Amino acid sequence: MNGMDPERPSEQGRAADGVVLAVLTVLMALLGALFPLPVWLVAPVPVAVLAYRHGYGLSVATAALAVLLVGWVEQQVFAGLAHVLPAAQLRYSLLGVMVAPVTLGLIGLVIGGAWREGISAGRTLWMAVLAAVLPGAATWLWVHLVHGVDLVAVFIDNSLLLARTLMEQAAQSAPAAEALADWRLMIESAERSFPLVRPFLPGTLVAAASCVAAVDMALTRAFLVRLGDDPPWFPPFARWRFPWPLALGFVAGQGLLLAGSAMGHAGLIIAGENMRVMFHLLFAAQGLAVGWYLLERRLPAVGRVLVLGLVFIVAPAVAAWTGVLDTWFNFRRLPPQPDGSRPEAGTGGET
Image (cartoon, rainbow, N blue to C red; front, side, top):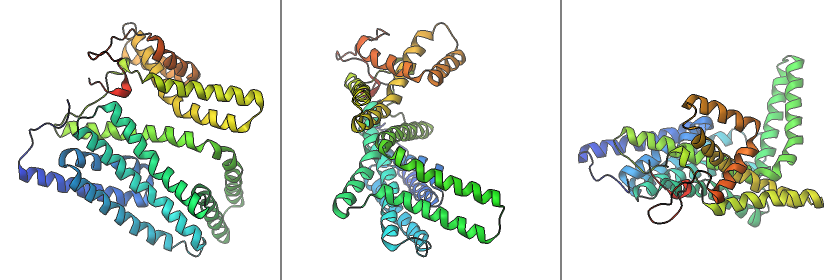
């Protein structure tokens, strides 16, 4: 289906529907301020449904109200930490935390708005990933360039300082020495590991954003289908095939890793690993789609899940390289689309 179904409930029904979705959006945002995981993972869903069914006016206003209320709640929470954290660090931490509700609201608006305009599921996914990545990246870059502050480092330092403070307070209550020792080891381990994993955060965050966007799209569509709508969706899993230029990113990442290892150049290794992480999951999914297609007539669905799950666990690189090579060699011999283009999961196609 392209765009919205013109058949809608009565005006009273639509108004009630909009009010319920708006209230649900605000409640989930406030609940997420207190319990970020897993609530914020699904927080974009009611915003997306609201944008799809009622347009941008109500959905944008609701998202803005939710962000303002979350900001007020977070301000109260951070005020209670004033005796633990320096004022400057508190201010930057609050700014970093507020990026989350803004990002989640934007993801919901992008998903619902794109589907309302009839944009394919593949293009909607890329737009949602950008919506998930850009606010945080832009905020980090702005604070870094203007104030010379690394928001990620501030957030980690504050978390470790808060953990140490809690440990010291717990020590005054005379808990078991073994528990305190374990707590201290966890903090020291986090302090040692952060500098090691920090260079690879960009690729990891892009991969995580892709997963969050995909989950939110799936939940939003399930919600809309229950309400009688039929937004665009991906082709069947066996036909998943991503645009071939993305494979160049995966290959470039592998090349940078090899070159960096051969030359002993840490910068090339970091750049290559980030690119590998960004594209690995994407093409592993396409490789599994190739396997699903080849096993479709040989094994039942349960058998295919078990076999491909084992491949993904034991040899994920094989799955990823299969997906990359499939973008060029078309192992499944998928026919071209009516417009002459290749069938690609990243450019749409509906079940």
